[in-house]
Amino acid sequence: FSADRAQERVSVGQYGSLIASVPKNITSMPITSQVECARQQRFSPYENNGGTCVAVAGQDYCIVASDSRLSQGYSILSRTTTKACQLTPKCVIASSGCNADQVALHKLLKFKIKM
Image 1 (cartoon, rainbow, N blue to C red):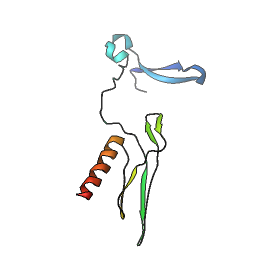
Image 2: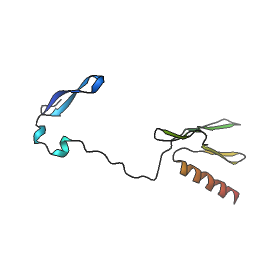
Image 3: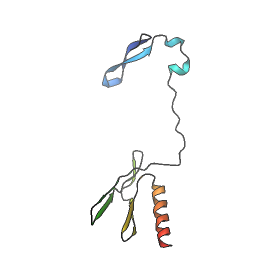
Image 4: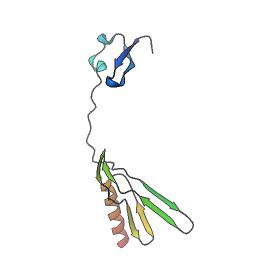
């Protein structure tokens, strides 16, 4: 700890206590430095729904696999959503991330292939 900071034992409930470093002259500091401001969640149209996709290829084979869980944060929205899509008899795509982007990409690729 630096010389201008003091050690203080802080209680953390049933888990005991920890030693925190606080400035010695905390009363003379600006209010914004004394209290950590809450972080505001900003709007984002992109929701990372997660997922796992993997592919293994050999000389005469290819295996593509993906999970089927669709989640948002800690909530499971579906356990049967596919992340893999067969575009042609010999072409498969698997993607993870934002489910809306996955569905849009799979539909667009199928449409382009049929043209």
